Image (cartoon, rainbow over the protein chains, first blue to last red):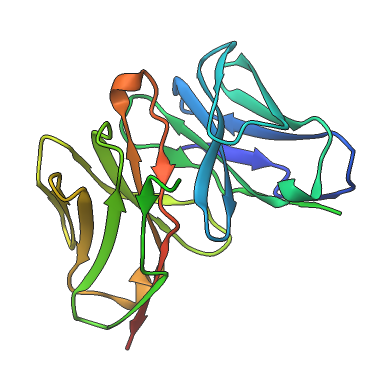
Length: 111
Length: 114
């Protein structure tokens, strides 16, 4: 399995608070991605990175920002959490434009 | 607008028989297709993929078929085993866009009955 960890694995927070999720890889892969999984929608891309400090928006980027200051770390920030951002968040990595490898996920609940 | 659709939310198959999971897409720019398997409380696991220049790819018990004219792909699992019970997602990407932005279907829950 690819070396991908996500932290925290579970988080409960209140509406309006900022939240940061971390994805850490030990594979030195170039590309990193953040997805959210919701019932009826499969997984949807939030943001992705194609190198250090190089990021771009995905399908559902509103309310989220990302940063990648090192190859191994990709941070997802919810600037002011809302109940609609309650979801399971997955990080993925890839070295090329073929398969992506996913982390174990973070379950976020916004009350 | 759902660009990748899995129209069967669930599928039940007897152990030892063939499981066929289906997926349709609408975007003709997609050139790479993947299947992922997901167990509860875990991340998706890559199963098999196919490029648009092929119509079939096989890996052990898993075969993916691509029909570009119908914009349809399917995953065949034979023989089905109890450990295959999981949610299966198909995904597609247009790699010529410079990054692999996967678009996923909604998933199909496969249950293998003993």
